[in-house]
Image (cartoon, rainbow over all chains, first blue to last red; front, side, top):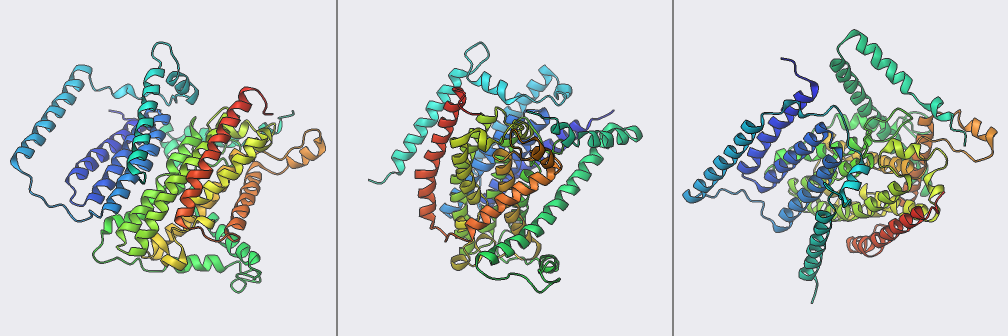
Length: 170
Length: 366
């Protein structure tokens, strides 16, 4: 069995991501959870980079690692909820968690079994250029995405105005 | 315009020769692995050496602006060995653990800061064919990687269990998130001008004239905005209130000692260098030599300075500009800083972007 460098990196990143995902949920301190989540997001970005989707990887780093996790940490700092959480989990919640995990695992296994585990899906260092991404994002032909792009912009604008309305002084 | 100097500057033949020699004695994967390790070691070594140079320069420049002499005892007349002596001192210090704080996060924070710094550092274009991380989206990656550092600062401030560090961290978090916007928008304006986002592409687009001349009015404005925002991103100059010594002892790294403190210190100086390096790449042509159209003899003489030399000259010039600003202006208050960004700097940078796009569409740039 020969294994390429890319596959080796993929396995290492995948294992680290799974470990940190579990640790995000099980950790007692909320700030530690946020940090483990940051590692998971780093891992996702690393997988995008392995696949050659450098644009998506950089956006993942910028939006999630540099934006969302920073906001999480910020809000944790400002709300002073840094005490350890040691709540008892009631039975109905435990059942719900187990059911969700089982359904999720079943879905993933179903997808893998029907499609096969595509080991060779890693393209040969082909990087998608910024120009093509830009053209596709605001193109109007088939498989181009101007409508979703504009709808997301409107949604974000609505969020910003809503935030300003809530935060402004009366 | 004559662009034959581009081939003469390239060190691509050397790197290709090294790669082929390695490939002839071992499998390609191993060769690539060894090259990666060697380049990693070079990057870290360069990082440390540049930090020493920058700290010495900061002391001398600061002294000059304050009409003092600066370090002059250790190692001859200029005090050349002062900083290496300080480095040795910091290496021998104990790394102190705090009681009742989250030690994992406390130890992690400096590594996050230095990781972000080294990632952006390795995107700098040293020479033709000497880019280390060169992607199609290069500049976007620089912005993305530099935004990791703020997580480290916030974690450092929280896990030190100290009011000063906490205030410093929250201040710097608010400031860095805000100034990232102007920085990103001005970078976007330069991407519009050079029609590519890859760092080597941006440099090569400036072979017939630096961006600051090609883009005239919007490019000069963008340069000023970029320097202001970059200064804030590096936590320096009039924007150093994350570690305002007079109010917060040392800000977010008050509780750190030894090498962990050293990491923060190193990252601060190298972020200054990285900001200057990116500024010289985007606006001043990176490793491109200084040419004046028509003066061929002058241009030929300029070509004798290698690309890496030009990169260092320009970058240290911008570093000197930033140090000048730092030692001239007093520190701002946090509300002044945020008002300045959101009410003046960001609208200005949006205007610059629109102006640049209009000029580019109508072909009014050179």
